[in-house]
Length: 144
Image 1 (tube, rainbow, N blue to C red):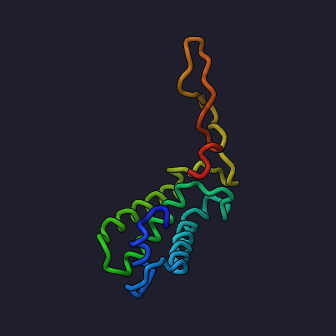
Image 2 (image 1 turned 180 degrees about the horizontal axis):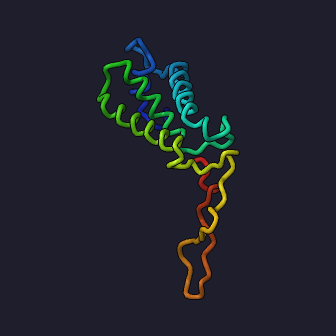
């Protein structure tokens, strides 16, 4: 949350006392815990939980859901923006639950293999047909 949202907003949203100048970590942890539980409700029918290596998109969705929940309790900023991010997060989770969008994980939390009959290619190459070594893959992008 602290990497995604301005400190001043998090201070205001996590404290009842307007004179406070630091983020109340317990309030943020509770909001993130609630968001995580909501996400789990969408994912548990398709994946073994907890995920051993959760995709980065889930961290963003958890932050968006937690921020919406925090903002909905207070008359700060434009709640419409937070609500839109929340609705987008839930829509993506619904699509994952339906199987329309994947998280890049198989049911056992392992990276899925190529679909039967698919052709896996890499961009680039030269006239000889040689392809350059892959720069980005699941391992090198871990954490981004």
